[in-house]
Length: 165
Image (cartoon, rainbow, N blue to C red; front, side):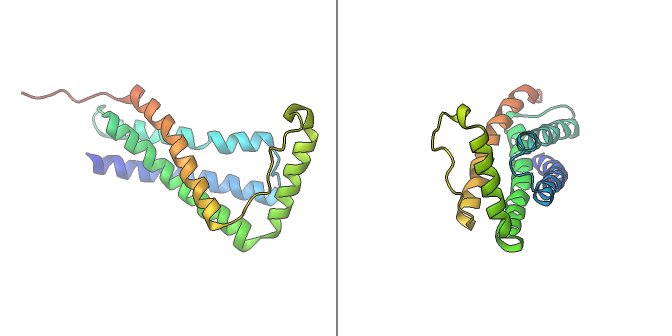
């Protein structure tokens, strides 16, 4: 049964990764690094795909999905999405177009200055480090953070199969 969950999660994860990759490339191409709406879209986009992986797995398992299977479905879907995101961002900002780093930093500084009153002059923004280690740390952090949503949605989706005597 876990094989069904893994297969479904991987397929939905690939679809989500393609959608996420399209958004990353779009932001990079139009240089909309300080767009709040696109930033929110980047944060929200993976969640429906994780929920879809759980739903599809539950449908494939005759409407039964344990908590473990639900979390596994969500986690594997997020793993695929964020792995592609990690690789794409690293390639774009470190290998393909290192000049985009300066543009992104400038956009972040301008955004901070524009919203200076809201930030109460706090030194919140640090110069980002574009290294493999920092990208990997971001990958792990996002994966762990989004797993919380996976646990919560698994609690909603779960339905244990009846025990046979």
